[in-house]
Length: 315
Length: 189
Image 1 (cartoon, rainbow over the protein chains, first blue to last red):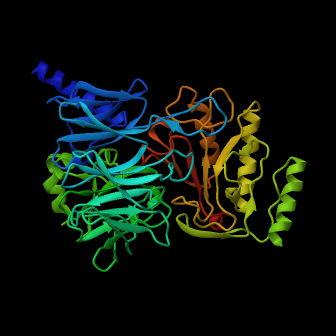
Image 2 (image 1 turned 135 degrees about the horizontal axis):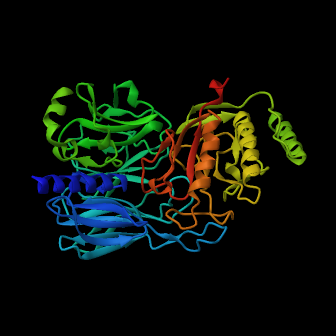
Image 3 (image 1 turned 90 degrees about the vertical axis):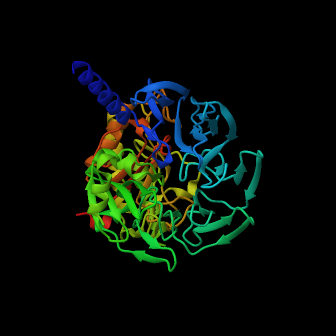
């Protein structure tokens, strides 16, 4: 019994340390590999069956954006660059920024230099990425090139556009690109026939079936909104969610019309919002700390054993 | 014409070493940070405790009331940090607000401000860094928050700053600056 308690306490301690250390899960809530912060560095670590760190896979000063290919055969993350001359009093860009792709044996299989944002294809071993140089302001990077990268063929298809955010939608296998320009905000790129088109959408984060989408609350400043895709009609959401300045993270629960929304008004709170019913439920605030922008989450892995009960409460 | 009169007044006040007087009419901050504009803007000049360090000189415009608050708190900052660094502003807004290629900054409530270096020099700093002065950066944001006129501050987890106003939503961004958003002065007493 004592041994059991000891082990439980150890696991709880480790889990709490992970939360405190800016833990980042892979998209779709895969818990086997996580990024942790330790001794001033970031490490990609493999968790054992007991959720303890079993193996350090990769370490660097700064890592983020851990994500998986559609079939979980590859995972990838961004290594952030360092200032070229950290002691200079002039901004001079960075060096060493890259996207690292690894296989299930934790071997690096490819790298993409200067990648700033990326998304895996929902169906193939391809990804789309925005590459550019770091800037000290605004979107924090220039958009030098956007391309679809085929991991198998090692080839790329250029998307001729300047944009700062992207999303590869599952419902229509289309890449949506956000220019952050209110006059013509969202473009779509068809990776099959390679056509680029303007759209009238106001955001790029589509639900699994494409019925709804929401806008990116990066740096907030306006209303956080959810739209119905077919007629671009704004869906009424609980008023507490409307000021996007205070949103800390938003993500769809996979295969549902439910959004996890973490917000900050004096203290951090996390809500589950059913877009169909308009109902909202307050959930454990620790979940909010695990939400990263625009990821998709598996309900049981993010909501825990009470997932069904919580989902029922907003039906 | 009014803008020119105000600019001259600001220069004169700057030469006298004090905060600039509030001009009339007041600046109007219209719309939202990601879809907005500004009327009757003022330039934020380098002054005691504050410097515009941005690469684009066209993005140093703000509102008169925000400028007055900024100059006042910059003087307090300077008195605590006489050997520097000054508060370093990278970007504010264009003269009439609007889109400057950022997702926000449009109604001129937003300031991008550098983190403080331990060696007190002025220059860029990217977190994590051994030259990051967390204590003085915390002091700096506390100065802003104590004005009671701050809506939100976007920063990164590596900055390890604490305040109920801090949003570290995007962990891979805001590694080289804090994004400080004032509340709209139209609601100030």
